[in-house]
Amino acid sequence: MKPIHGDKLRGHLETLILSVLERGEAHGLEILHRLDEAGCGLLHLKEGSLYPALYRLEEAGKIQAVWEEEPHGRRGARRRIYRLTAKGKRELAKGRLEWASFVQIISGIVGAPA
Amino acid sequence: MNDVSLKALKVIVERAVGPVRATMARKRRMREELLAHLLAIFDEEAEKLGDEQAALEQAKQRFGDARELTSQLQQAVPRWDRCRSMVESMGYRPGESAWHLAAKHFLAMLLIYLLWVPMIELAFGGLRNLGPLEQRVWALWAVVAVGAVVFLALFNVILSVVLASLLDKIGPILASKRRGRILLAVLCGLVVVCGLVPHFTGAAVLFILIARQAVKQWRYQADWI
Image (tube, rainbow over all chains, first blue to last red; front, side):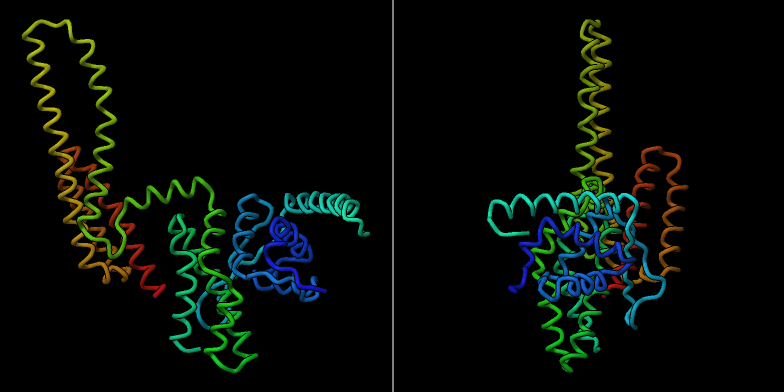
């Protein structure tokens, strides 16, 4: 299978993040590892792009973030740990329905089974 | 990891976050989180490749284009935060020239004073039917009022220049918490001294706020570099 690059993920990234956070709280790099694992290494996302999406989700109240208590490693920069909120869970359920309907419609047009 | 690599990672973060129009607090949060991410991917790559320079290149590659990230980060900044950052930008920024600060303040004050013009016009509008003596008194009052406005605007500009020169010279030492507090205490003393003239008190309070922000910025800059 061909890898999927950032441009094609745009518009779906927020739902993808919400779905990996459903498995439990995580910091940015862990979210990327989970996405990579779930996408069998075929999702190619520029890692910096994850953060604007996280900030948007946080601003919309769909996820919550707390600073980790101790800096990771020896160089003082702390990570933020993200977790899904009740609003985020509702948004994820909505996102799944939208995705299912999108796939159904497009596959009907393209003529390829979902 | 050596200091050169750490600095190179900070440069990558700064290229992305620096141009974003947002409050200092929000940008600080972005910087720390993005740096933590870059440090983690640098470590991953260094372990895999066994070479710091190659790891640095790979981390940069994985992180993505700074300019693109800047625009994505900008879109994630709420409107109210952008407005707050505009107000914040009226304060002193480390390294900013005294004249630049003074010009910013002069324009801001001019704008504030100009807001009063329609009100003065309204007040005078109702007085057009007065006798010649009263009209002369009001005209004199107008001259005094305009003079006072010009004087106060110039006074504030002079204060801005003095304060910015002072902060520029003593800025680096403000990175120390104790010295920063001493400066704020001195400025608070100034407020008490200027307390007799209401406008001077207002100006002194404004400059304390600017100095307080400058102290914070210098301290943060010292930590970041």
